[in-house]
Length: 291
Image (cartoon, rainbow, N blue to C red; front, side, top):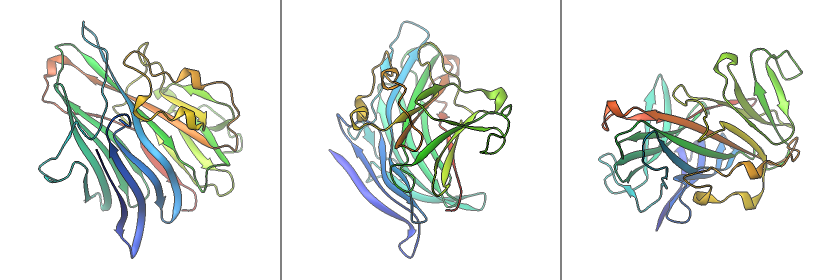
């Protein structure tokens, strides 16, 4: 089973966002998948999804890999007749398009949400509540972003650190020209970006305030890879014990190529807080250039 559709928002007469969405069942267990997303008529995503969600407990429990799919999704009071809930809301003087699904897995309650703002900001989010076992644990949420800015090729990935001089991309920014994995660094305000080299349009990827740090169980925060169709495994990416992303890093050149970005947020849940409190994780994606 699956539910899918197309959205032109806020209206066909004023199309700020145009995109397709899909929530499928096994083996495509990657939550709500966004495809062919355009902002103000210009290509942003080819595909964006959350192919892996791993759970790590401090005690004798798990680990788990929790698939988000059609069969474990439930309607909510906001959208009692649909497993994918689509609505608009206003905050801070701006309107946003929200696409979300609610899932139950064991004792977990999970909401997978995409928020597309009228100013081009994108907020992918995972919200979680519930305790499967009475131990502290962390949910490691992996998003996969295949941007395809103004087409599949000619993209460039960059990293920002506040100690980097101006190397031609603005103070703090430097390009990454081969596949690599990076960790967050709060002291250097580390963030990342992807742009189309011809148009200069792109997005910054800024870690969320609750996105945590990598550890021995989930040992990466951000990956840049050259696109390969065989590496898009949908919800079959990795296992409870490993994200299995390291084999994809083989030093390929990504300067001016079709680039795929992976981002991981590490959501901490303290057992003493109980199972009713909701926690969330996810990066903010900020557009730049002439959209």
